[in-house]
Amino acid sequence: MSSLPYRVAIIGAGSSGLAAAVKLYSSESARPISATIFESRREAGGRTRSFTDGESHDTLDNGQHLLLGCYTSTLSYLRTIGSKHLLQKQNSLEIPYMIPGEFRSSTLKLAAGLPVPLNLLSGLFQTDLLHKYEKIAAMRFGMGLMMFRYDKHMAHASCAELFKFAHQPVTLIEKLWKPIVIGTINLPPEKASAQVFLHLMRIIFLQNRKYSAMLFPKVGLSDMLINPAVKYLEQHGCTIKYGENVRSIKHGNNLIYLESDGGNDVFDALIFAGNYHDASFLPEEVQELIPPITYSPIANAYLWTDKKIIGKPICGFIGTSLEWCFSKPTHTSGELLACTKSAADGLIAKENDEIANIFWNDIKKSFPGSDAKLLRSVIIKEKRATPLLNAELQLHRPKTRTPVPHLYLAGDLVQNGLPMTIEGAVRNGQKAAAEVLKGI
Ligand SMILES: Cc1cc2nc3c(=O)[nH]c(=O)nc-3n(C[C@H](O)[C@H](O)[C@H](O)COP(=O)(O)OP(=O)(O)OC[C@H]3O[C@@H](n4cnc5c(N)ncnc54)[C@H](O)[C@@H]3O)c2cc1C
Image (cartoon, rainbow, N blue to C red; front, side):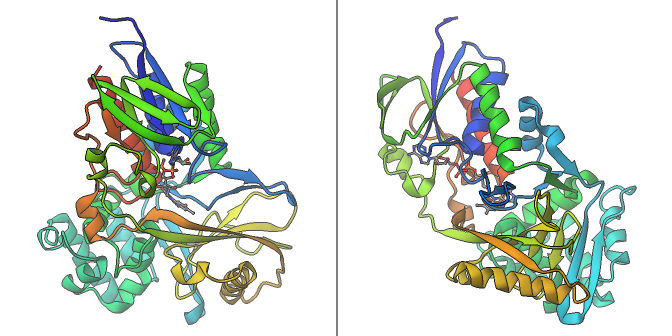
């Protein structure tokens, strides 16, 4: 056995690239690892990053992120880097909804003491979010899900086609399925892959009662997911090269030759965890594996109010432009609200003030008794929030292994049946690292 370090290059210091590096350094290895991460930006984090707002000094994320109990790979990553305690966990899924069009609010709450699927059945039975016929249709859908009744027809279908096939009432789709599809796949049911939705629903609702509970970061995303990983990696001897765009990858003699802004390097293995719309520097036989990518945007607004108005970690909105609102810690005002709208194609073309007003009006309509005033807003438009995961893309997502020896793919795009999420990104990073370790 050689004691020479095994040189691994990782492209991208988003959650996937960092998870890959953490896995390399925290696993048993036939040779000592020497990893170098190339990150084109001046900071790590990619699509999960935070910054300090200059005026309020509050920590803001590039967009509110929500984690679920089923994020098992992410939880193990957070445990390794020592930041799992920075998540606030629900005991079991509980979502308060505002329905201003019907002048009411409602709650969907799964029973904490019951195993799956009884917790789901009792939650559906008890909620006043749905009418009796909608509950029966939802339960029928759940039965079909458990019995894999839809899967063989749905490989090429959208969620809208799935709901039609499963005879789901339009009102149930609007109140229950559409918010779940948009919130998890960042696409409307007409576009989102049915196959991904079915897989995800089985994981969240049918495997373990803890998997549907929501996990809220108590601090900014960078302080929970990114900075502790960077610290862990630096302590273990990993080099992170910031501001270094990778320009070319070649291979031969069982080695990988990498050219970046900083010059030329040679590695024994490479993990690509960068952005797939911009991967023309990868070897041709790898590029051939990558399908055409378009993106689905997310619009985020931070609203500072003079008084508390929501006061809950999360609040869902039905029938409004605003979909989710989160109450965040603030130094300066009554409440800081992180508002999000996924699949926000129509919204992100608007001016920032207009977006803030649309969200604020939705909140005011939903809490008509409140005299809270909007003090200030910050809008963040993420045009490339997630690859547009329709049925076509789901069928053509690349796999971890490539035809090039010792070159592996990671990032949220790589096939794992999940939507483009932190969990998908972390899991794919860990899987690519496991492949590297196997190949030593
Ligand atoms: C607003 C918003 C809200 C979201 N909400 C949620 C949520 O609630 N829950 C959830 O689980 N997920 C959510 N997501 C999705 C989640 O953020 C992503 O799936 C995940 O962060 C992807 O991580 P990644 O490492 O694969 O990619 P990225 O984070 O994009 O990292 C790729 C990195 O590679 C670098 N790079 C690219 N090309 C090169 C190159 N040539 N050389 C060097 N470096 C390069 C980039 O600069 C970047 O840092 C959300 C995303 C956004 C934008």
